Length: 460
Ligand code: 5AD
Ligand code: SF4
Image (cartoon, rainbow, N blue to C red):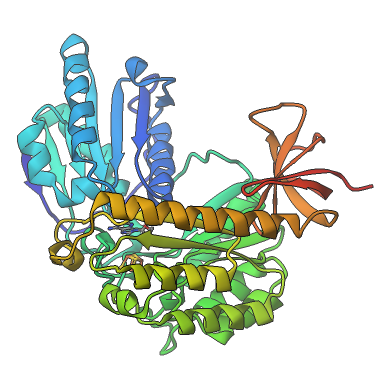
């Protein structure tokens, strides 16, 4: 396979589609960043005349958008690629692999799956059509950029195919400058680069013109937004950006993910409170409640500090819905450390938590620590944490019984078409017997509560 690493080319929208009538199928692994990248890849393919295929079997092009953040996806990926090899021997088929694993393991993919036509990195999403052209003409190609110095590669700068027409993700930074010892992201996504506020605002305006009512600003650490920019000697701050996005006419809701607990300041909380479009929602990743584990994770805060920061945001936004990420079983985590996590979880009273069992990511410092825990210990702690959080989630939802909340409709509920699924400003899902088009608002009175959803009736 060729491996090329040239200067950053410019994405230009193609005027004459060259793949009209062909069908594509994208399989996405992993996080919101990847789902967002997938929507952009789909948008690019559609700008070239392609259409989505119902299944991989019907597709002319199959793209795997890979992830390495939490699991050893190797076996899954190579197993799937093996089945595609058989498919490819029966009919013309292009196969492309992108995302974090492609970025990290490009040679391995070349060696183990020589039938893959295109391997592209996380900064090369915008080049996918050119790379497919290259594969058509010259054969297989791998293209990865080690460093990005330009925002051309920002997924949001590309055309898009959105899964939900009324709600969109907007990338504000790519990469991460932190060094959490468990995390592969800085290795595969590179150093942090911020988009200029004017680009972000332009994109949000265009989205609103297309019917979008809600945006989620995306970055690995949104609090450090703008530190790498220079606007006439001034660095734009995330708080300024929130206020500016709030000025976009027609936008109803703004969310963002994720702030880093070590960096969030009162200016951001004040901007949240003073910008009516910013929703009362915060994703605030704890990771662990033990000071010694947090130190070895390089998180830059203690359990107490985390709670103080959360309190600070809550003092500006009293009705805040808070979610978190927690890793169970970090190397060397003792029962006492785990108890500290349970204590912080009990004190923080999160509305919901994404809980993960620690998974060593090759190449990260924590993967080298020699005090890795057994699967049984981790599973047992995980179950205890999940039970505690479920109880808190239920209590938080029960506290909403009888209250009337603003919902944004997401259309008919998947389980029962006589109901709609809507989201509160806090991001909670409410099922409600009503029929309101997606993206429109209604008010609902909450009639029943479960840990992960609510039921309501339209408020009269
Ligand atoms: N093992 C388990 N969970 C991880 N996360 C990141 N890296 C790992 C890992 N090696 C979790 C963190 C992060 C979320 C996106 O994924 O909780 O916040
Ligand atoms: Fe990973 Fe830490 Fe950066 Fe989040 S802040 S992406 S956990 S290194």
